Image (cartoon, rainbow over all chains, first blue to last red; front, side, top):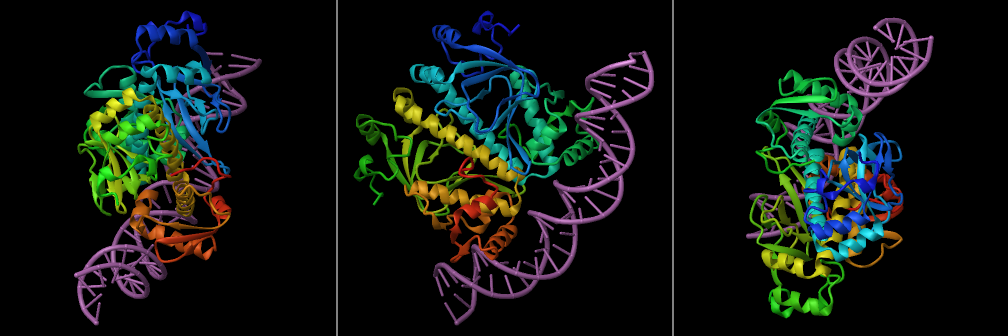
Length: 246
Length: 246
DNA sequence: CGATTCGTTGACTGCACTCAATTTAAGTGG
DNA sequence: CCACTTAAATTGAGTGCAGTCAACGAATCG
């Protein structure tokens, strides 16, 4: 359905309410409609490598991608998990600081970079929304440094699941059901480990441990059910609903 | 010298070229001059606690502060190190997500929050500069997650020193001398450890180890000389000058 | 000069990593 | 549909890096 760019209208876009265009009037939307194009990346594809040219500013419409960096000796760390409405790229910079890899089949809504920079200058609603989203991302990145710097393996895995559940509920625009959330993991164990600053083995062991503690149920390796969300949140060292967002 | 706000002019402000006001015209500066006020915090003072009201949006003029979070059991992680021209607070949010603590005597240039939000809406040069700075901070925060997630204690300490040297040279607006940089540490060992996700003891041991390797010289606990900057950068796992900024 | 805080060093422990084997899942072609 | 192959995930055994606990030394300050 998203293969022909001209056929998709902003009016029915699933990220209309949360993406960089969220604050736009219908006039402004008409303008964006002219400038945008879509592109699809199959799961596993590298959207852009660290240091490479970024020709477009893009928003994720459907799918999921990681932001990561690989050190010379092969160690890798994910620095972000991008879900629908999150953006890739930035005005004023032509190269990506990180690898961006599609985890699932991913549809991007894109603007040519210099074109988008012009839009930013002329459309305060875009610039303002972009600032808000960037400030939110900054808070989230800082929250995540607390997890990476100070938490145990068990707490890291619990934090990740709690954050992922919260974010997915936001993407689906549905509140977290009080009892029994099911999270679909868009990442393999290896990608989870790279996100958490752990090894595959430790990640796997902690999932097993959380299951044996009754805090989660697993249904295949990609589905995790959280019977008592609050209990897992406490395990994550997360007081109430404040703070941590992936 | 900064005790009377009315006596200080933006024209001679040390952060004029790098702060949120950097892109402003002299007309716009006149307007900021009316709205601004200064406040000084002695070293060790908490500027604002996590969850507390933030009445102002502030830029650091002189001094140094940490952004941190403390878990219930006392574990603490610094999520940012604020140097002159960095800002505290954000438009659109009235409470601080983190503790902000002055490390040295610190002078802030402040705008009442709702007033600043109005300025953001009416002064594109401010909004645009704020966006650029926030995007830079986001990249820096993500760079730092790589250090926290994947680096050894030795690499963490080396990374920190390299980043601090680079940032201080930017604050001083002087290029890094090719041979022999001296860094003044604005943090105690404990604060360094909180920044690096390590303990005081491990941090201290790694400094000793780097000294014994000839990569640094120490002059008291707060001064570190880096005889060969590139050598330390390599130890930090940092290829060339790309990437990592604290 | 004594008191107190900060930093360094030492001895030992433990959590997460490494290496390796096994189990489970996901494809693939006959 | 089922053998076969390949990849992903789990589990086990042992190691090592950073943490913990504790003592000592150095710097700062009244």
